[in-house]
Image 1 (tube, rainbow, N blue to C red):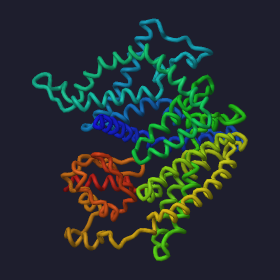
Image 2: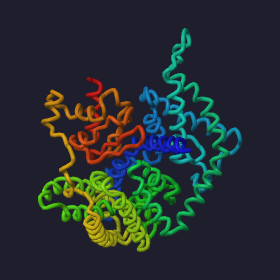
Image 3: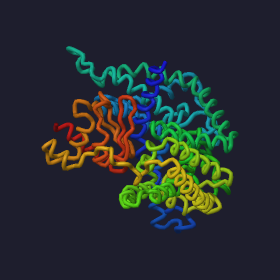
Image 4: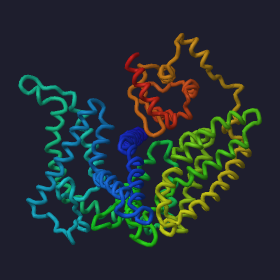
Length: 519
């Protein structure tokens, strides 16, 4: 039973990692759309001016990306889950997505089930128009389902080569051929199944609304608590990107998910006097600005006098990253492994702050750091988002974090930054390492050795802050050496090790891949 549950968890983590590909781009798309909304805001810039027209052009350029998230996630997940020939897998994903649209549209027409537009739009019919096809409205879920299916088939068939005259149909072409009946079956099946599934999703949305602050607390707790496992993406993404988080209607079009809803308000602030309640699931960024700052100050004040400068050198870059862009792992992983109790309390305090925002109807865009907070919220009327109360609650959160963390660190004698006992811990010096290995020292070479050597590495990937490496033998991992390379923390998950490097992880991964290719 344990083996089965471990296998399921491993598959979920793999899927979560694959989702990071498209998710990487969403903050960029969101910020550009926010800029567009600022430029087209008639209260700030004269309508018809060059700036206003430029803002409209930028918005019209990027809004279709939000309208086609299903396609983007289909490609991204297929690429992420493909074990080999990733570029060909992505190309097959594009073709299969379009094939599904064509097949689903054709079957709806053949069965006489194409919905009639209401006031010129498909809103409320359960259908939508995608790339010129009228299809069942599955939203982002279509991309998730197709992406997983295509990757599964691709991994089994992409390396099969046929002989003789059939050789041109091998490899990725064979994957496309095999996917054809599957696509047709899914297109027909979902024309019947998805309305029922959609009803279930609507009921789930209704339940979360009815659960009120309890629902917000559960969301907030698990969104933070599951970060070490990498499964927290399954908590926040449905609420920010799908109808589970809520829906509104703008100009006859359905807008789903808290991020798209907020951006719709940026284009049209007069949609309602107060921001839609979907934004109650987008306040987790408060802790990145205020709460963790309180924790970092507590760590500094409790550090040993001789190590305060060392603690400062660790904490300032970590908390700056958290405050500005909402990347929290560098600071969070300084205490996650030291005290699981602190981590649970961290998740509880994060959830309680979101409950406070819900009770006071505080609804700015607040899932990330200070930069996004300012860009998204300052152009909108204060009465719409009530963002000043977000800051007030945040200051209270700062004080609570400081007092709670300082008290626990001292009472439990926790080895947070600046309080470590080094006497019995053997750490390598870089000089010792390079002398021992007789190399001038590429950092990537050091990482490879710390991971057990090239032969011990199966695959390398990364998310926002973590280097994710699939490993053959976990016993060969040298955590002390990894920390010398700048790692903020190390997480082991069965055959995968996650090394937290922060925002530089992309460069680390690229250098590591080059070194692996050369060695």
